[in-house]
Image 1 (cartoon, protein in one colour):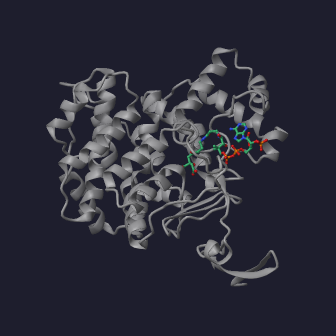
Image 2 (tube, helix red, strand yellow; image 1 turned 135 degrees about the vertical axis):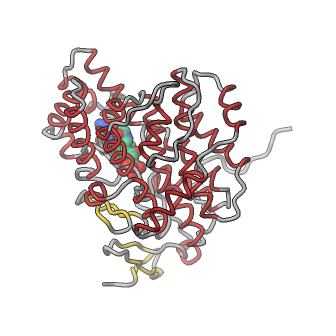
Image 3 (cartoon, protein in one colour; image 1 turned 135 degrees about the horizontal axis):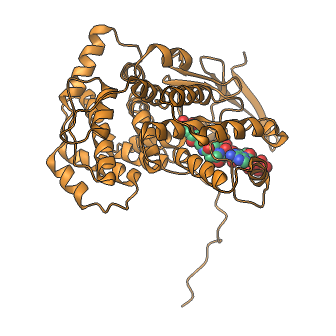
Length: 416
Ligand code: SDX
């Protein structure tokens, strides 16, 4: 394998080192490029740019592979809980029984929030989008939490984010705040905090908790996606963990990123409401003059099936069958996927369903309202965001500060 790349500019010869990853993905190390050649690179959207070395997750977009700390997502989804997956992503190894017990107990130790959070939540108008509420409350958490141990910060967030999400949901639907139940596992506690009704016992449904466990695992980490890179960028400026995570939530909220799960259901409902003519909507998605895009389709990295979409589709089918829900949206989604994958536009552009295409159907079947879908995505992505923030510090990544190509005015003087 070559270790340098040689090139000439204006008759001068240069060489730059090549670095290789675990699976021999290769990169030209351009950290000395400008110093040596006076040139910078130009790569809007960082489509060809690696910003760090990471060992947390790995995606092979051509083969549709996703590994968390080396373990294939297909194995994790069947053998691990979301809390075990969170431990793996944060610490690099799967926990043994004692480690898992201690991790879960420490999280329970932090599963309360200050009364001021509820008072602040009361003041937030009901029309605020849940992602805006969650991001704001996450930032505010910083005021109330003074951790001596860095690890406790991660545990506080794993404990408190589901509480903030549940409080946000309950505020929207007019239910009083709920509290954590230490006798329950992470997922059962999350569901009870969301859906329990005062003075009534909450009956857990293992079908629903299994589906929620799986869909949170599917979201746990995904290399340098927009929101994770946002968290790393803030961390590189030595911004605190809570503020960095809060900013990551705001990045996730975007319709092209984590907001797509809500946009998918809205798209499917619109198609259904307008007669369900799939061909018409696929033609709209292909029409450059039409701003309509097939939400939940396409991915910057996956040019093959998103393995998470395959799993999410099975979880959705299984959930709907076992809950005996007749959901025309799922049928429409499957027909739309089938039709799009036979269309040359989607085949040539390698546009496949991504995680967001089916995740909304799962959330909706569990009883989560559309505008809370991205909140659920954030709950799943939390371990990944925190692991990247932690790794950025361990890597001692320099403050992120890209350059630009200036195309504005030449130097000019203000006229007197
Ligand atoms: C997530 O990065 C991650 O890992 C993200 C994520 C994670 O886990 O963190 O996986 C989660 O964000 C998944 C993506 C959710 N977003 C959507 O489903 C929104 C719809 N998808 C598109 O907006 C788009 O596919 C993106 C944003 C996902 C990817 O955009 P890229 O990589 O910048 O690709 P592009 O927009 O340049 O598209 C390439 C071509 C274009 O056509 P041409 O200009 O080359 O002729 O494909 C077309 C696009 O018009 N295209 C689509 C399309 N997606 C891309 N055409 C119709 N429908 C689509 N959905």
